[in-house]
Amino acid sequence: MFIVIEGIDGAGCETQGKRLLNMINHHSGERGDGKLTSDARMTATLIKYPDYERNVGKIIREFLYQNKDLTAEQQFLLYTMQFIMDKKMIAERRKDEILIADRYFSTTLCYQTLEGIDMTMALDYAKNFQIEVPDAVFYLNVDPDIAIKRKHGEDKEKNFREKDFDFIRKTHKKYQELVDQQVWTKWVNIDGNKAVEEVTKAIYNVITNIK
Image (tube, rainbow, N blue to C red; front, top):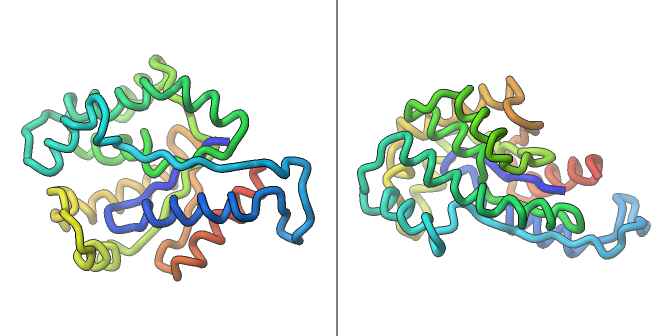
């Protein structure tokens, strides 16, 4: 299957993606009761978007970290190009493993529509260019003030979006609309305010049921 971990800046998408990867691979072939399933060799792989190290990712990094001036349309095209380029890879991997994406087109549906991109156009674009639709998007629903505090406490470089607290609050509201309306694919609301271990287990339990 193909799933996405989604949320506002500071929600813990990267952390949960890595933890989920380890949990799936560690418990590969086990059901909740500890008995082996028929797919005992099931494995998981984690991918992350945007990928700053290849193609348009370098321009995206300049936009986020060096204040490169880009229109909403330019942002949309740059972000979605990686999803289009990776669609064959995603289609193949989701057949034989659990492919986890730390952010994806679901992020674009939040951020770039807030920048001014029309939602209907964005969805038509995804359909026309056959962007792979995930089986589920797990939205880490974290209180914006908690997310801001988490992000502020991180000892690493922050991009301009992560420093814009008002925009973080706007993304929280927009994500809730996407979840409530189940836009594009199945959205699963996860209480991201809970302990890290509880959040991972909650996602894992839903994945087990989907499979």
